[in-house]
Length: 351
Ligand SMILES: C[S@@+](CC[C@H](N)C(=O)[O-])C[C@H]1O[C@@H](n2cnc3c(N)ncnc32)[C@H](O)[C@@H]1O
Image 1 (cartoon, helix red, strand yellow):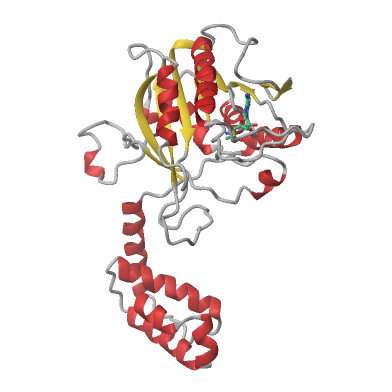
Image 2 (image 1 turned 135 degrees about the horizontal axis):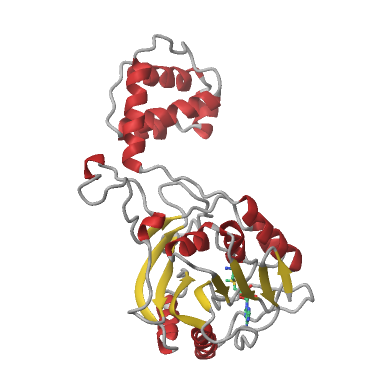
C-alpha cells in the first residue's frame, strides 16, 4: 500500500476491494486493461496477461464493476474510458454492456478527442486499410438515476456569440457538450519504457471530477500510473486506486505531476478566427514587410500564414506580397534539390 499526498494506492487486484466500505465513494473514473496484449509489468517483474479469452475478459470486468457498485454511494457517477482499436472494433460496446450487466445505468457516451485538426500527438499508422483512431469513448454511468447530479457549467465554455449572454444565462458560460478535446501533448514513450503502456492525460479525470460537484472521494480500480490521483491532488481531494502490477517510481512521479498540472486553455475556434482577422487588419496598416525570405524556416512560417489567410478568406494588402516572396524563394533554390525538400508544386497547390 502507498500513502502519498493524501492519495492511497492498494497494490492488489480490484476484483475484491475489501479495504473500502459499502457506499463510501462519490466518483469512479477508470480505464481498464484493453485486452490487446499490452504489457504491464510491475517492479517485481510480474507481467500482466492482457490477452484473455474475450468471455473471460468481460466476466473479469463485470466482477470489478460490481465491486465498484458496492463501494459507490447512491448518487455516485462512473466514467469508463475505453478506445476502439483498428483490429477490434466493437469491443468498447461490449465493455460498456459489461458495466450495465453489473448494475450500472448508462446515461451517455462522451467522445474524448486525443487529436483534432492537427492539435495533439498521434503516430500516423500510414496504412491504406483504415483511418487513424483519434478519439476514445468515455461512457457515463450512474448508480441511481434520480440521485446523481452533474454541473455542466463547471467545465463550461464562453459563448461564441456574446449576444446570448442574458438570453440563456446571466453569465458568459454554457455547457461545453459531450465532445472533449484533451490533446496528447507528448508521446507515451517515457511511461511505456517504464512498464505502463496506456496512461490517459491528467486533464481527463480532472474534467470528470469537476463535472461532479461536491466530490470528496474518487476511486480508480485500474490505477496504472495513477493519473486519476494526480487530478485529485490538483483539486485537493482524496483519491484511492488499485494497481496489481505497480511501478512505484512511475506512480509517485505521476501523482506529484498533479501539483503543477495546468489545464490547457483551448481557444474557441470562432474567437480564434475573429482574432486572426483583427490582427491581419492591424498588420495591413504596417508598412514594413521583409523584402526577401532568407531561410527555410521563414519560408515555412509564411507558408502557414498564407494557408490560414486562404482558409479564412482573408484579403489584406500584404497577401500578394507573401505569395510573391514565397515564389521568389522557391525559384531561387536549386530546382532539383528543392523538389525533394519543399515540393514547390505541392506547396503551390495548397497555397
Ligand atoms: C489501461 S491501464 C490504466 C492506465 C491509467 N488510467 C493511467 O493513466 O495510467 C490498466 C491498468 O490496470 C492494471 N490491472 C490489470 N489487472 C488488474 C487487476 N486485477 N487489479 C488492479 N489493476 C489491474 C494494469 O496493470 C494497468 O496498469
